[in-house]
Figure 1 (cartoon, one colour):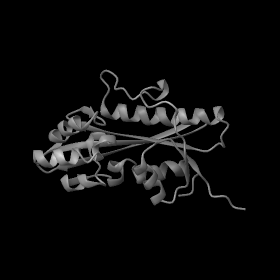
Figure 2 (cartoon, helix red, strand yellow):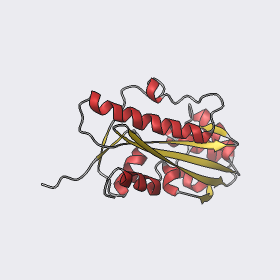
Figure 3 (tube, helix red, strand yellow):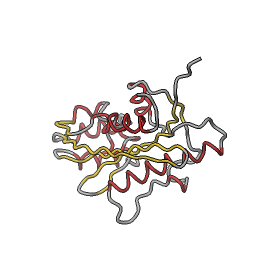
Length: 204
């Protein structure tokens, strides 16, 4: 019997699950017991002086490496572990997920009428081997009215997303222009992901 190759996805993001499914990748979820801030191996707090590029790469590499180390601990079948992290760069400042609706409104008001960068790093680890690629895209928002920012924030959609918006959701109406990878902005750059999977022998 020819079994379909599989990987582990170390991410809770439904967007990443959808994107992997879109390109025909079969996976099982590998969830960490602690949250990103509680687990020392994948702590998502920004370090002093850390650039957006360094931050997003560090988190993706840490998650993939941590996932690979759990395979032996949990006595799982040996497979590549894929992890990713997305952040926004606004004037060199790292902008992650909002704390609440009010914070989401503050972030969206800051993005209104201007461009920002979206960085997504994807990493794959297996055994002692780990590889990473980062996709950087530019997104420009039209000028947003205060009432539409408020209405969007109250939908709850921004709360689990870096930069307080999802380009694949209602916030698509805010986007005037993008330059780069649409899937990278959503949360998993499929071009870079495909090339990484091939490095680990996954047929995609």
